[in-house]
Amino acid sequence: MRVIITDSYERMGLEAANIVAGQIYLKPDSVLGLATGSTPLSLYRRLIAVHETVGLDFSSVTTFNLDEYIGMEPDSPHSYHYFMHEHFFDHINIAPENIHLPSGTAEDMAAEGRRYEDMIAKAGGIDLQVLGIGRNAHIGFNEPDVKFEATTHKVALDEETIKANARFFDREEDVPRYAISMGIKTIMLARRVILLASGAAKAEAVSKTLCGSVTPKAPASILQLHQDVTIILDKEAAALLPKEIYGVRIDNYG
Ligand code: F6R
Image 1 (cartoon, protein in one colour):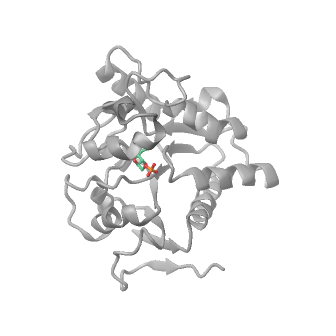
Image 2 (tube, protein in one colour):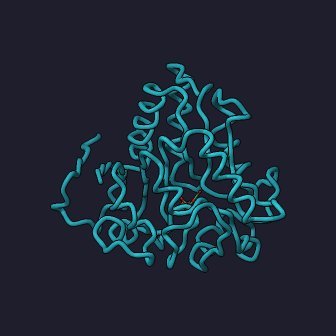
């Protein structure tokens, strides 16, 4: 695991954008795995800026998002479909047919999971997966006590996740209780992974991910076994890491 510690949330996004942009320059038809939530917004803002200023070309890029709430229509403002269009896809030149999110309204979630996995396989697999992390160390919506061998499937959200995501809804009762999410196996099969974390609320999850045992109780800890992972943090999210952690690059941005 490589670890990059930056001074701020915006710098975290900039470091991540450099990696994603580099991936697209080297392989214009890259397959990207994408995340929603607050964490990747600085990454998406930066990628939009690179697209607008130097023409980073998304026309051959294919994307697969990690997850979607069950029961959520794609055009609902609370859906991850909507979120991705609003914060990223509507601002770049990606082909609409190359955008994929699991359907939260499929009749049969097991079949939808298989369909999603087939589409990822047909696209050639994920070249670069972008991840955020939950306070409980979830990745995607793979909550503690996850089965590491799972592929895309229906998941029940943890109480902690429901509370954390209530900020996007009027009332906590409105947060969906279920989602469809790529599984840990789907994520582990990506050729490269970048995980972003920002803020003190993520420090414990980050410490468990990097320094704890590999355990289903901290789903992100499985990333210790992935061959190509870069963890990009702001200093608050890195606060509980031991100073001597190897591979760390601390950026002294002004
Ligand atoms: C989002 C996702 C989640 C989030 C995580 C952190 O698609 O799969 O794992 O990355 O819950 O969310 P934020 O960034 O809002 O703190």
